[in-house]
Length: 620
Image (cartoon, rainbow, N blue to C red):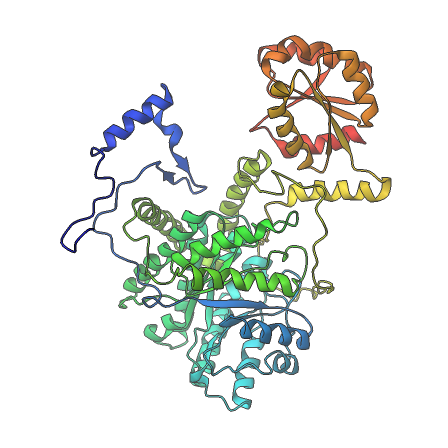
């Protein structure tokens, strides 16, 4: 038994190991390859080393109060007020500690949302005790009307505004950036922000009242540093607007909150939330203020959601929530796993709610403040994100501030460049989307959502300023469009498009590449029909004809290809194959293989999306 005075040494029986010892072992595995092969890179170009020492002199990032849980926010966006109220009450009764009221036209409403009407809002909040430590967060469009309606509702109910935890969420810059237009110019935007805060603060509400929302950049495909820089630039613009309206900076900074997206890149998400606190503290210091923790809301990312195999979205949301929680988020909203398919039903909402409850109540993630403080990798990533984001923020400021940068297309061009790189990696399946670009399930059952059609978008009003929008995307859309095309053919013709897997040799020869080819083609909705295997070209051609498939893919090892691929391709071409693929690279045989009739090669790292799109031209 170990006494209190004894020191427990883990792995004490092993000799001490140094980084040099580790490098020696690594070099043996690399066999002459450069060490840089093990160094990863983010879309911001930040290097991620394979090993980090403990960070010296690291201090925890001040965020939530020690051992305090984050607020479990549940999205309320049903257009029917009575049903929205039913959902809200059920959420609060079953563990949610706050409600995110999403109004129609908000930049993340995604086709649904609450009506900005007094009667509708009162019905939505019926039975919700706003003075019982229930957090309310508004997600607005261009109009501040819902914020004022809520303030009037509180007054009519006789509730003390100071006793309410309401984040009003006014974000005219974020709304303009997502739509590419605003009815406000730079001067009226600032004036409206100041007058709104004065009115609500004067009525006794604590706020915050304005939201610097990084989801706009994240949803459009941007990088972590770009998202952080956008939040900083918006926050500084709001500080300036409030100061111009005669509001002291000490009061103005308390009027602003931030909102970030959380996605499946666990370490980058965690570092991003930590970085924002350091960055905002630097802004406060520049304003002559003593830094205090910024209120940061997190929401699981829209762009990571898939319509195909949506149950995988549960795992994505869990990773994202885990990272945002450990990163110090004050409040988190989990998008239900069916959100990309339509308005989520009660089951999807329950799963979203329970994702947070399990992490808080069973995994106890909030018990330790900033648990990654001192971890070499996280500290390094946090510092590098701060540097990269601050440099971009300075560039935005030099351009004249966030609105001027948007009007000049500065932010849009940078986001577009990252999105282009991201799209290329998704197309090549380097960034894997499980259930969409990899491991597809063509037989998946239909998933239930509420029978509510998306709202018609109101006509755009007269714009005082306009520019290219930061429109939201989902990363899986390219593969989903091909799956939709396959579904349409199934409905109209009674069968999906198919590819025959012409397996050469024994199972040991072809299984690996046949498995790869199946996943490759079915990611585009093209059903794979397995051949039995063998080396007789005539038998292979007959099996192809019997399959009913229009296209064919040869599958085997390089050794078997060397002897059997050419005669097999010739036999398949003679049998009427419209297009012949080979699973693998052509190598030294490529010219001979192409002459024999092989038109394309499918392999890891190739442009899968382009190849699959081309396949449909051969199928049709």
